[in-house]
Each structure stands twice: as C-alpha cells, then as structure tokens.
Amino acid sequence: MTLDRTPMNAPDVPAHRHKPGQCSAYGCPMWAGIKVGTDWVCDCHAFADITQWQEVTARLNQRIKLIRATHRAMNTDPFKGWAHAAAMYMPKIGRPDLVPMKVTLAHPYRDRHTGEMVERFVERDEAEHLPLWAMRLRNTLFRECVNGIPQAQQPETRAAATGPQTAASLLPEFSQ
Image (cartoon, rainbow, N blue to C red; front, side):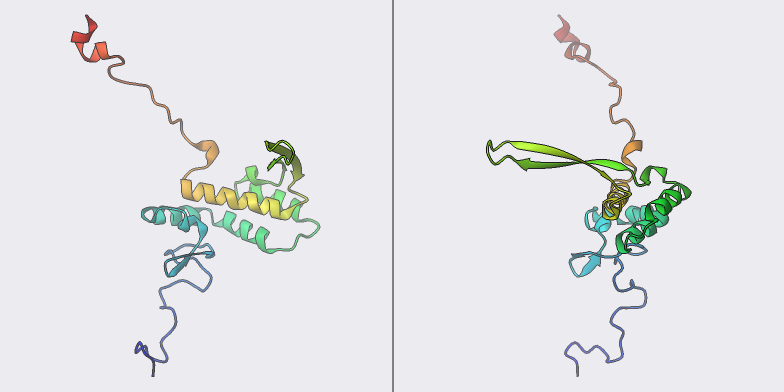
C-alpha cells in the first residue's frame, strides 16, 4: 500500500510530459541541467523570465541544427578530422560565423607582488581544442535564445530626440 494512494501501475511521469533528461518546458528540445522548483530545465529556460519561456522554446526549435551540432561537440571524443567536418557543416546550416577559428582568451589574475589585476592574453585555435569550440557554440546558442537576437544583429538603441529640447521651448515664460 502506498501512502499517497497512487496506483502501483501508474507511470512515474504522465504521457504528455518530457523524456527523462529533457527540459521540462513544453516543446523544448534541450537537455535539462538545472533544477527549478521540482522541474529540471535547460539553462536557456532557467535564466529566462518565465513569461518568456514560449519565445525561448520557439527560438530553440528554430535552431535545432545548431543544438544538434552543439550536443555532438560536447559529447564526442575529438577525432582527427572533426575540425574539417565542423568547417564543412556549419556553413551548410547557415552559420559560417561558428566555424572553428583562432580566439584570444583573456585570463585576469591578481599579481602577487603588487596586488594589481593583470590580464594575460592567450591565443588558442579552436580546431585543436574541441571543448573550446563547443563552449563558443553553447554560449552563442544561449545568447541568441535568451536575448532573442544575435549580438551582431541587434538594432540601434539610440533614437532621435523628438519634442522640446530645452526648457525654454517647453515653457515660453522661461525664455525671457
């Protein structure tokens, strides 16, 4: 006998729910990694406002090929031709900007003699470091799906000022 009166043959998860390991946001194709309340969700949904979950899910579903490429990059052993395969595949899915390339990494640290913060710059080739490329794919996916649009394509946020520009033009009695 069970204490909560759940039948012995009841499934652990209702049929309309997600697969084990998958994000619990409805329709999300991502794997879960962060527990929010009683549900496990992907990082895109965990760090997005709950009112934006449908938009985040729609953006993720639009980028399903990028999700699959990211998943493969994160879960495969590097083989000899992976960088060439990635360089051929990313333009095919419409993302030539995500081909493995040389990146400059900044490593800030505190100098133990002076106590000042010092930055050391290291140049790495992502074609030689699969986890580094996978991290860039993951960051791109997160940025595009949570923020809505790619960083490079964000519209100008400054608008031309309209209306009165000075107090004198707003209130004629101050112009004297």
